[in-house]
Length: 61
Length: 507
Image 1 (tube, rainbow over the protein chains, first blue to last red):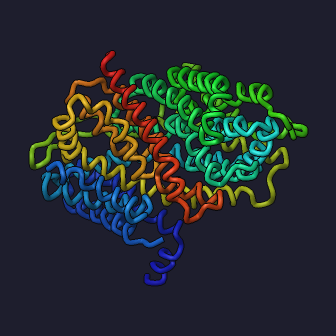
Image 2 (image 1 turned 135 degrees about the horizontal axis):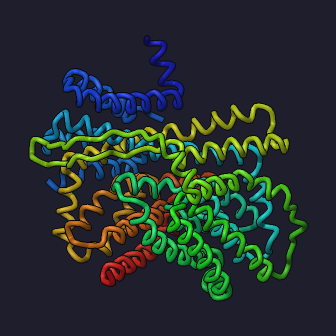
């Protein structure tokens, strides 16, 4: 896990691609989560998006 | 509440301009600030947040599809040496320094903006002008000014599409006033480019060709976008400029014409990809049966009414619908494939070209895609929390009838802080729309001022200046470029502000 994470951080393109997917996919799931009233799923997806944005902020070029 | 509502925008501005962060980092910070303020002070609830994020995803995909594929097409042509062929051919036309500045730094820069964008015009043209004997500073300043007017309808209409996506308004409402404002700005930047090349003398000597070329380019762009072909408005404007500029260059070819012989065949092959794009776009827009057939598959959600704990309501309605097979991104993708086959058949590629094209496209667009994603999510959260509305009310009550003169400056501010006209339109279009509605001003004119200001302001965005400086060998002298560009851009923004005020009075 640690190896995978450090590999991800080392390659800028892969890092940003991962962040992009982590923002877009939960964003779509949120629509269905809100429709079905699944509060837990809403919180999980929102947390992933927030974490992805936080990771973008703390990534140094 | 006004200060809180504007805080995400101020955070982005501070981080990008003050601390020189990239758009992806600053966008993330802006998103987190917007979320925090919306949650604590504006009472946004998880359900509203969920719908806001889902709505943002479709706006993001709509905008990114064009950005990704526009850059892909540019790389397909560039990898084959097409851009180099174009760049080499143009200096053959004239030895007159002023005319060279106009043909390469204004017309060719506008054409490159039409097909590529993303800082490409300055990056490609600055080294050519240095090679022709212009000072490095002028070599950056001339194309920076020259391409600015083509930004909104350039990059295959990415910035204009962003404005439509953010406001939900159709091209029929937005295209005409935007094309008029940008057209007038286009003529002005022609004069500005001539001034940067040789001062008032050059302006006086070349006033006639500047006017002719400016009117032709602006009219071509206006006619194209008002026919609904907004994705190729910049491309057609730039092409019309080249068509009229080349014969005019022969009239002003200077005393010593060291032209040699221009080889037309490679020049035409290098333009083939963009030719395919123009033909496909025209076919889809002008053949109703084909248009209807390709419009059958649509992606998008219908969103319910949302209400924050503070009582701010966003009415129910469809989000952005993506018509995948008629989307400008799909047309660009097909054009890229066609161009690739043409160049491959002509033997213009070295081994491994495809992987280099795909690799460099991915590397170039992915970081900015993250930035755009964060900024759009921030803008939609602000809209759903009522923050945009609070800002609009603040502006309308404090500025009143002075607002039209200020609206292009807001667009320019957005472009400076986010590095692009498209991002500025995503962040500020809705704010400008709401403020115009509150003040009873014509929305289309205010949004035309927004995008024209954004296009002009993007020239002085630190990210673009850094690109120009690095290609002209001016690393570390970005401040000098900024000092040269800033007064000209301020004058142009004043002119746009006056045009906006006149437009509002006349309506």
